[in-house]
Length: 170
Image 1 (cartoon, rainbow, N blue to C red):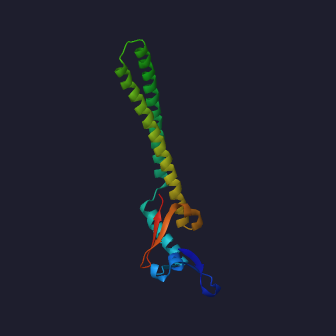
Image 2: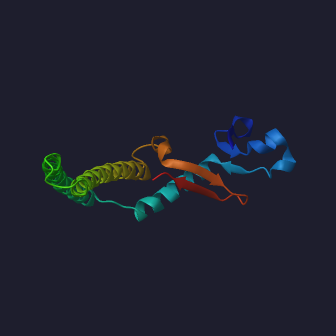
């Protein structure tokens, strides 16, 4: 769709399907949506989204503390597992244990490393999710303009009946 100004240099805009203009009236029914209606739909669906996915500051802080504690525990486990793996490697080199025995301990160390990486990534994802939610919350209360949340909108869809739907990146 493309944005156009209302007739007679009116102070309003609308969106219309470009397929009709480019390929002819027989290729498109001429979708049309007023910009004001699109903005109203964005605010309405934004309000619904914020209400459905509301995250309080205290819940956010608690979750971050949980992630931080989990990461600290996993870091300790990883360190212990890698120290154990190095000791088993020395035993393997001296011929005191088999290669299979060493591999079992090495696999445990690798699993501990993967668990730490995953927990760290999960924390980062949650922090980004909260930052995005906080941005949407600010737009919902009109503390920031809609232009600040464009990166949160995947697409705006206007169906054949003129119904407007917003798809969010989250």
